[in-house]
Length: 373
Image (cartoon, rainbow, N blue to C red; front, side, top):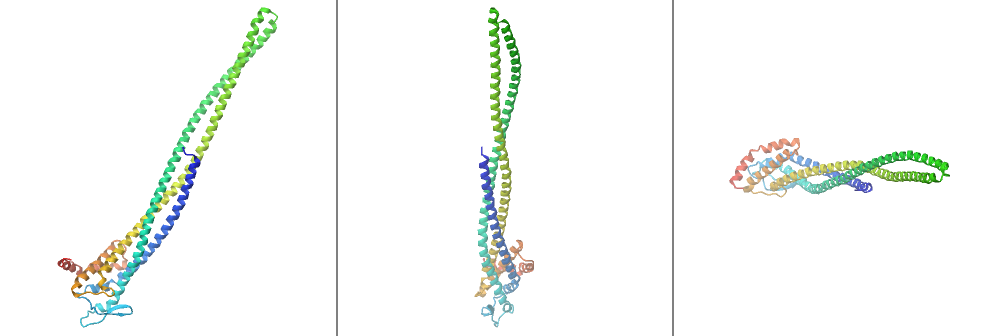
């Protein structure tokens, strides 16, 4: 059976672990909150770029590629007018370059944040495991305290039973002592009678041979009975004192165990709260990581599909149909995914609706199938 001192030492260790878990959870939660704020900022920038996507779509729905001759004005690439120039490309080209550059910038920021989010996800998962192990440790200590308390209670009940038995023996001994006292009085009276008989008959030679031995025998028997009674009483008193001391010790142990159990309940409640909080932070980190994965994957697909429209991009007339339809498909995929995941700003819903309803997407699918793409 574990001693109360050992249990209290373990409880102190549990309290220290609780404090450490609280600190770790707080740090991870602060880190996750910072990442979430960064995600919202990056997502806001992405939605801002999405609001300008109609300029990109205006180019992608052209039946032929825009002019390939480009120049730089104010840091933005714009197309020079040519004889066969389309009116849609020239005023939109600067916006197109800006939109793609903004999306690319968002991707860079999100990829860096995604790495941090992955680290936070791993750290929170480890912390959740640590909190679960701490809970199991609390449960183990709890079982130890409960078992020790049960054993102490059993020992206390056994001791109380022995005390009751000893008390019965003392009562019986007291009864016997009373009887012996009565017998002693009788014997004393007989001794006195014997003495009286002795003094009244000692001068009679024949009688005193009887009265003297009888008187001495009664006196010896009386003394023996009284001595036996006293010895029994002393033995029982010693046993009673031992059992009472044992009972007091068990009472003290039980009180200490009850205090330990109360402290353990507090520690377990704290550990349960830490485990719940750690699990909550872990789940939030998973959600944030999933959001980063979803957005960065969609953004990467869009940038790859629109690479020919970026700075220095080039596209031949023969590849125009295939490239623009892939670009439209990538834009549609990103917008649909963001909308389904509730990551698309309300003001961008019209843009998504416009892209999803493009007839060029349906035509493009047929053409791509013809090309066996």
